[in-house]
Image 1: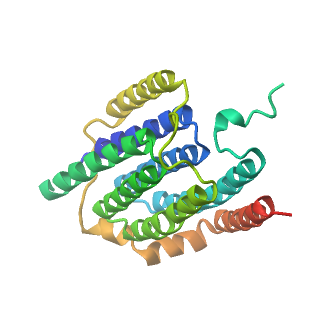
Image 2: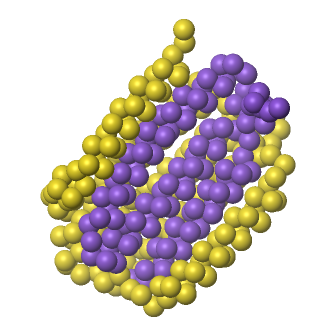
Length: 99
Length: 167
């Protein structure tokens, strides 16, 4: 199977994730787009692992999955805090740090 | 070989459509369900290249834990199920241009660098992805990164509790 199949699929998912991060207003949807990007990286890592016949890619995919779980935990905690303080998860409203 | 290619393309098209659903859906819960399709498709792709352990960890952690966290997040923030306005901000077109440009560049690079390279699907591939092999790699070659990741996970969980706690 062509290696490029996997790489281009993962590039597509990554770019969709970038679009989501840039174009979404709702903080939860932005976090979902970040998950899309992390998942695209995992596909890349596993494809290279099969291509090079090396297990390292799969090990790093597991690390990325772990860190994604930590990131979602922290991210949703921050989103909850923003919601509690601003009564909105609209990222355009979270501009208290703007000078 | 042919069967794997057919399976790949079916999964890839489903994943691409669902990924667009994640970033285009105007309903937050639908976006989370589209995300499940993408994540399950990725797990199936892992099985196609015989990375079974990673595939099942993907199902357990991503679909089992992370999507549930998202659904809790949607529930607790009372995100509008059907939005009054749009879920997208005004930079939609600029974002589309950026992501299409990046996709073009990355695809051109991949075609240039790996055009014609093939993943050999043979029996030895199964031996690489088996859990015993991954475990000995983690606990022998990648022990320090593993410990660092576990400390990071601990710190993140404590931090999440501290941030989200109501005092």
